[in-house]
Length: 79
Image 1 (tube, rainbow, N blue to C red):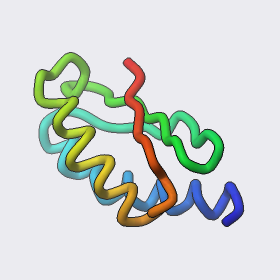
Image 2 (cartoon, helix red, strand yellow; image 1 turned 180 degrees about the vertical axis):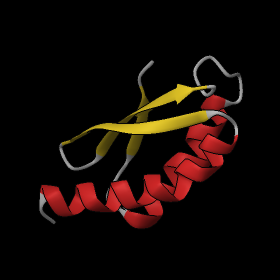
Image 3 (cartoon, rainbow, N blue to C red; image 1 turned 90 degrees about the horizontal axis):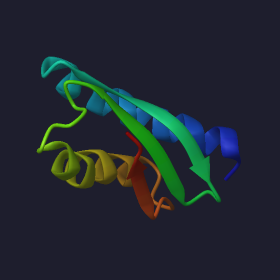
Image 4 (tube, rainbow, N blue to C red; image 1 turned 90 degrees about the vertical axis):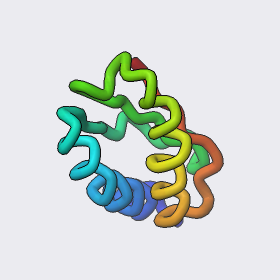
């Protein structure tokens, strides 16, 4: 799969997640996709420093991204 196709799939996944984060005053941005297997995102707004955000990242965000782009092995949040 080409990089821009993969990016489109990851963006679609983030669009699916975004309303839930925004309802809590947060947001998420795609920072990069490395080697076609690692996605770096940034949680923003109320999601920053929230004790739940690591759980949210692992369960919700990573699961949704992998649903759209199964080749993704790792999702990393940068603060």
